[in-house]
View 1 (tube, rainbow, N blue to C red):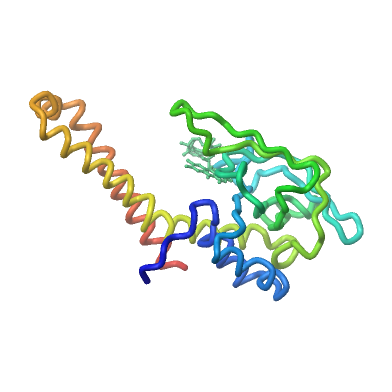
View 2 (cartoon, rainbow, N blue to C red; view 1 turned 180 degrees about the vertical axis):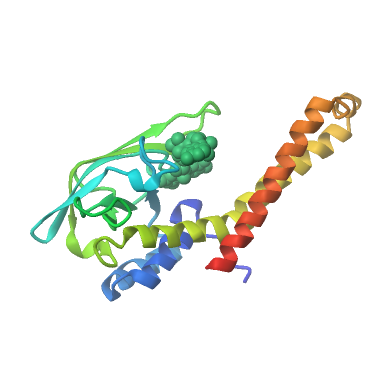
Length: 226
Ligand SMILES: Cc1cc2nc3c(=O)[nH]c(=O)nc-3n(C[C@H](O)[C@H](O)[C@H](O)COP(=O)(O)OP(=O)(O)OC[C@H]3O[C@@H](n4cnc5c(N)ncnc54)[C@H](O)[C@@H]3O)c2cc1C
């Protein structure tokens, strides 16, 4: 209580619970302390150019070579990848398995040879998201979280934490506050008051309000399922 929040890119809320639930003793000992202290930053390697909403269509693969997994593929929209030390990477390890059952979660050192990060510049000038390319990246086999092929189930747990606590208590509130600030500012100026009488604008603002409310309720639904 009252403790400062960890930096946005620490991802303590996402990979932390996954390691506590599915990680090996060695993985928990290695990563939990630096996650909590914020000494090591993480990124989430899920989305790909052909796998957004349909996440299980992802094609980044990790092939076993002895005790090592060799990763090839591409991720996109990876927030903070340019400053991350580690990536929790969802990738295909079981080529023959049905698409949801062939995935595993790997912990990848972002300084490994073969990892290339390209920030994506947004129209705001900021570059929060990145593309990340993996070319023959060698990952020790003991950095696979849980059982091989259990990645989908682990990823759904991570996303439940993202939609539940993270979105409900941080982003949803920020978006709601921005909307309230916008309305307050508009009501304080004659031009804004006139604009707010416009039926098309009123309809659009109402739609935004409905979507923020849906986000809040969806967050609470995720919270109750954790
Ligand atoms: C702020 C932000 C940060 C992000 N950070 C990360 C990150 O760190 N790591 C990461 O892995 N990803 C990240 N993402 C990506 C995100 O989690 C989603 O995977 C991605 O935005 C959705 O994929 P897409 O953009 O390819 O859209 P698509 O999946 O192509 O969807 C495009 C549109 O089509 C609609 N649509 C898709 N399928 C259907 C369907 N079957 N029926 C009807 N409509 C459909 C969708 O609702 C959407 O409106 C981030 C996204 C945002 C906005």
